[in-house]
Image (tube, rainbow, N blue to C red; front, top):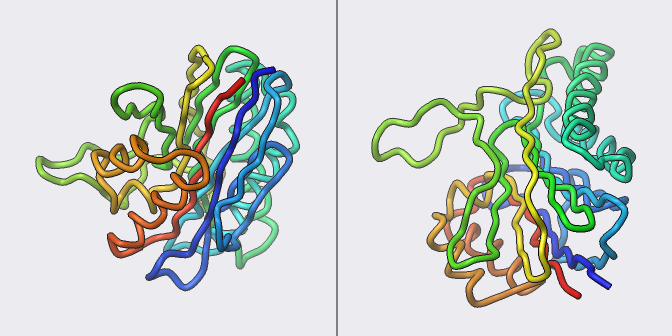
Length: 246
């Protein structure tokens, strides 16, 4: 029977005072806390399985609250996410959920988060994101980014930016989002990484690929985290590595 192995971790990094990232893997969520070691979970393919990372906005209130609201909502909706339309509706609902919570508490006003993830179906994959957290396909002979960064165009020679052009929440009043959602075929042997920019900003794609060519599962998740730490760990680091087996 086809299955998916998900190895995941979340860490504060070396600079931030606390973790504003959250993670969902099926019914399991990890919100604003730290895993000492990668956790590996196995799921049969069939019922839609959502795996997503939400990165609370730094420099604004309660990023960890916004990211936790989103992953918990996705965990509850996960089994119903069987189409692009369902995923778009779920992400838009997450956006409204963040704004509703912020509107009820002055200390939460302006909180926001990015989100990026995948939904695994029996033989296909739904990819979605708002913001600059990423979904990467590491199945073939090179790394391929499947998500779409919501960043302004970068000047020549600049690889990263902290500016994000759309997020879930993040402003004083409700602002609509346009989620990026696509469908891809899914095959045994496919591998994917879902991560916050605490991994991809400090670690170039070539270095990520070097790790993934050598390691898999929990060891790969650990080595990716270590690469971000070795690069200075400037942000929270949250990632999930998925492998489809049989």
